[in-house]
Amino acid sequence: MRETLLPLLRCPRCNAEGAFELQASETDEREVRAGSLTCRGCGHVATIARGVVDLMPDPPEVVRREAAGLERFAETMRADGWDRERILNLPNEDIPYWHGQARQFERVMERIEPEPGDALLDVGSNTCWASNAFAARGLNVIALDIATAEMQGLYTADWWMEANDVYFERVLSPMFEPALASEVVDWVFCCEVLHHNSRDDLRRTFRELHRVLRPGGAILVLNEGLRFPTNLKRDHGAEVEQYEGNENVYFVHEYLGAARRAGFELELVEPAIPFFTGEPLWLMPEASALGSTKVYAQQLLRRSRVGRRAYLWWTVLLGPDGNLSMICRKPGNRSAGA
Image (cartoon, rainbow, N blue to C red):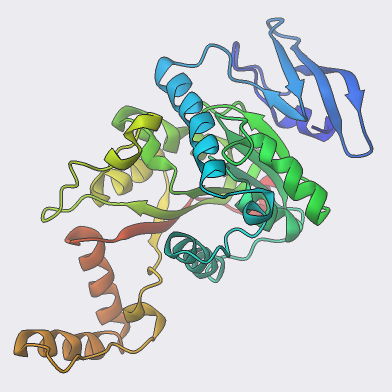
């Protein structure tokens, strides 16, 4: 960490903002690598290890289990052939999951105008690929996560910084109680992370992210899986149950309601599927009359703004499959809060 992070932090014990004093025991040309922070308000001491500030004292059991599961999942990744080189290629890994991440990331970036020097909080940074991408664009990035494991946590940051000559801060803290001061970031990035909340914590997370954002700032939400009336996904997350990842799945109205109650103005972002990207909608020779009618109707719908909006709402409300991406804007003037 660097000393410039100090005024952006909030004590997780007493909630005092900008009250930490730094005691460095190891530094390099980039940052403070080891040491501690002491709160002037309550005396709480937070450790610094490998540049990561630990602001997560006494996390709840569900967080402890999930962090331990991420450690185990990192070992599974290594056994499956993942290494530093593959991680540093993200999000351009040649598998469908990462294709979806990369394409939707670019679609969201087309809708916003982050400027060099803007502050961004990467929530659930995990492999730190997005922290790297934003830092490479000149943003001042804080990666926030509950785990430190290489490949699945904040220690992965060292790989990106060494390989790409970028820098970003790393803070160990839960998203529903981020240890950041109020109105200190312009952007918050959440990629497939909000569903790792209970319903109560989902609402709490939106309130807290509203607090840390400056007026006019926004949360960028990518690829949250959804529950639908025709696909309730009762086995959601079963394939990773052994890692205790606190997997949940919600209807779109639960996300939208939590965000609106927190004070956000919402804009849905079209998913990167052929209907919206302009790719051909193929009609197969064996298609039924109903299938042919559906493809023809989609061709007509996507030519108009109203049609595209209607189809977007269909995908997030009725599915039967699809993801939610949206921009949640905090009302106000960004220049006034910067």
